Image (cartoon, rainbow, N blue to C red):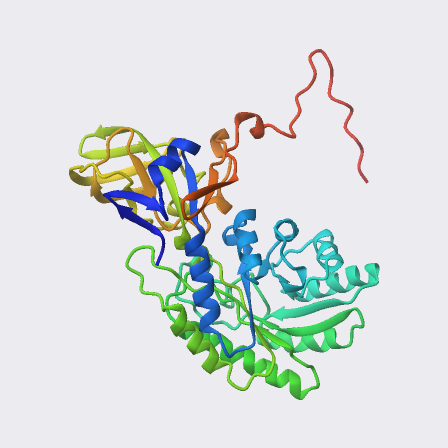
Amino acid sequence: MNHFERKDGELRAEKIRLEDLARAYGTPLYVYSSATLRRHWRVLDRSLSGLRHLVCYATKANGNLGILDLFARMGAGFDIVSGGELYRVLKAGGDPRKVVFSGVGKTDEEIAFALSQRVKCLNVESGPELARVSVVARRLGAIAPIALRVNPDVDPRTHPYIATGLKKSKFGVSVEDARRLYRIAARDPAIEIRGVACHIGSQITTVTPFLDAIARVRALARDLERTGIQVRHLDIGGGLGIQYRDEDPPHPDEYGAAVKRAMRGFRGEVILEPGRVLVGNAGVLLTRVLHVKRSGRKVFAVVDAAMNDLVRPSLYGAHHDIESCGAAPRPPGTVDVVGPVCESSDFLAQGRKMPVPEAGDLLCVRSAGAYGFSMSSNYNARPRAAEVLVAGDTAHLVRKREAWPDLVRGEKVRPPGRRFPARRRIG
């Protein structure tokens, strides 16, 4: 469920017409519904009632400070994959003691920052990274809380780019390697073992892969405890999918019930890392039709949003429903919705059966709250879109639109008539 609905034929975000938001803030424009964000959070958290748990929102899905602040106020923890995401969480008022730090390539600087902020756990993804964490902790005179991210070799049945739990994946370590690395970590005075972690992928639409993965990490946890290594928590990752088109993902209540059954008898804490399921359908991308171009039998609706604003269709072949925000009827047809970027892959939809829009129409690209703005770029020197968070009849500008000067901030040109300084010798 989301709070983008029609009233008197016009599409609204909660109580505000999307057309009014577009006129006030321009397009392309990301719009988020706080009521939807809150509802998704509550439904998922409630589904786990009776189970000692911590929901750590996957910041990479959408790291806007307004959204992070909303989740922090509801008691969320955060799953991060970079020092920059930790910085964002702290700026939004997030509690570092509820932060888990994942990712295969943490730098020494990022590890030190996380340890200085006393994050809950670093999810270590290789033997070399375990050694690096130990060295940084010793340098700081700290003890690093860690879990090993185990690769359970479970097929999540999703797009190969977002499947992370197979043996061929760059993420995590095998169960066999994990046993060896846990023995090493247990002997290291700079390391404190907190738990076992796994994450098998994203946009998963059945509970079976989750249950298979949980069974494998629980078996590992039992083996570790038999050897005297205490497991305080199991981090079972995220990845629960949403409906973009004709998918039929499990309701959070079904997912929560399945997790509780799978975790029966576990005395520690269960950590989850949901992202898309919380924010995906809580956001839309608004874009204005510049003109309609006809070439033979092809009809192109050329809009002011592009692959730099929403790359998922170009990158994954992802489907996003697209509809007009207005009430005016349009004749049906088959349309390519394309942007201004100089790439043939710059499209939001191809061969889409939909009412053929006209110049000036405002289109709503649905389910754009996750991996929309967070994956956007300045390709073709295009300023990034503004973001608005709606609460009832109030709109909050949570990111202003970039302007052309923002594109070159931090860059320099050679002063007229002068040479660049001599190249500095390094090493």
